[in-house]
Length: 107
Image 1 (cartoon, rainbow, N blue to C red):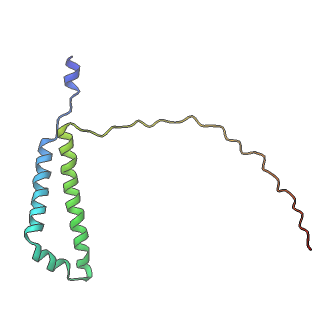
Image 2: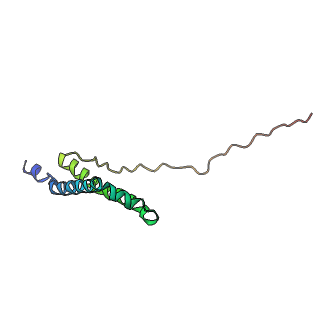
Image 3: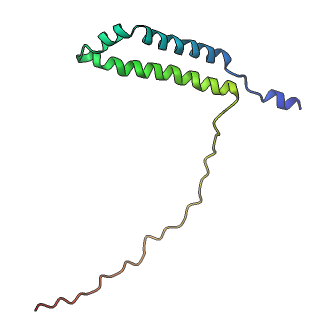
């Protein structure tokens, strides 16, 4: 019974809270400064990459929060083991069908 308690994983509560606060801060900063963000993102040229970079940053932080949230809730992805299939013998010297002769009559 003592073995069962040693196998329990520690839940990443602190990481979840940090990523959650950071995610909320990013969303709040983006939504509270909509005019400035729109003015900056619509300048053109290299500024066109800023919306893409912002979306990646918010997605990364929010994804980390979601990962740690589900870990704290106790829901983990199943880890499938890789099964190796026994190799089948392949016959490379197989018989190939011969084309059938055709009769072409001209009228």
